[in-house]
Amino acid sequence: MNHDLHLNIGSRYSILSSIFFIPYVIFQLPSNLFLRRLGGTHWLASLVIAWGSVQLAMGFVPSWGYLALCRVLLGAFEAGFFPAMVYIISTWYRRHEVQKRLAVFYLIGIFIGAFSAVFAAALSLLHGTYGIAGWAWIFIIEGAITIAFGFVAWVFLPGFPDQNAFLTEEETSIVLQRVEKDRGDAVPDALTFEKVVKHLLDWKIWAIGIPPYTPLSFSANYFVKRAGLMYMCAAVPAYAISLFVTIILASMGWSPLQSMLLSAPPYVFTVCQFFFP
Image 1 (cartoon, rainbow, N blue to C red):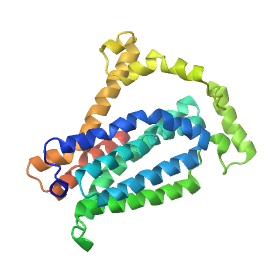
Image 2 (cartoon, rainbow, N blue to C red; image 1 turned 60 degrees about the horizontal axis):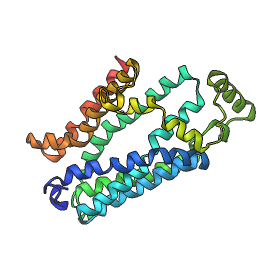
Image 3 (cartoon, one colour; image 1 turned 90 degrees about the horizontal axis):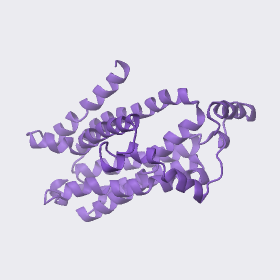
Image 4 (cartoon, rainbow, N blue to C red; image 1 turned 90 degrees about the vertical axis):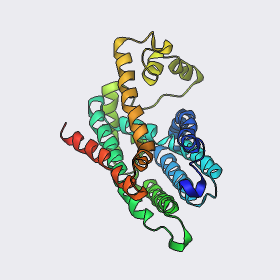
């Protein structure tokens, strides 16, 4: 891929890695606003199909510029997925029940990270088939699988409790009553400009999302600073590993195939640590 798209010139690879996060940050909040208006099932399934289509298209890009464009689109479409899933899961369960469900959700993502590395290594062996490079086959096949899962989600993803189609009215009422009794927000209230401004001006939200001990976090209390520190310590190495581990391994002399295979063990270890903390 580096040879075909000339990614080894200057900082092209770093640009491709970082440009994804600009739309990823910008579109997270708007995506969740659409989530409630359009429904969890339809909106999430549409996002999955859209980013799968972009991923498939990445297998046919002729230059790194087109790949950069695809990375921007990928960031825009993926932006709403994780926040939406966390939001939807939280609407089904009481507060003390949510943590375990979210842990399983993130664990599945980590497990897929381990599997995808091995799967990508296997797909790279298709190099030359129909005149298509191995790296292109990875994007094409994984993109097609993502699109297929998007259509499956359209049928089976439950969405919000008050919009589900698989529970009876009595069962749905029980779910809503449990959540309402626990925290009083089972039924969403109307979205207004004043409410948006109120939450955007909540310093606790910003303090958790920015590094601690910076000017923006001076007003945060001890707990919020520690929460921001824990999030930063988890996010920075996680993204660094996912984006650059294959390059680091390749610079140590491993082949592209070996680098992809060797990128799987950190994810496997993380899954094991979940069961044996």
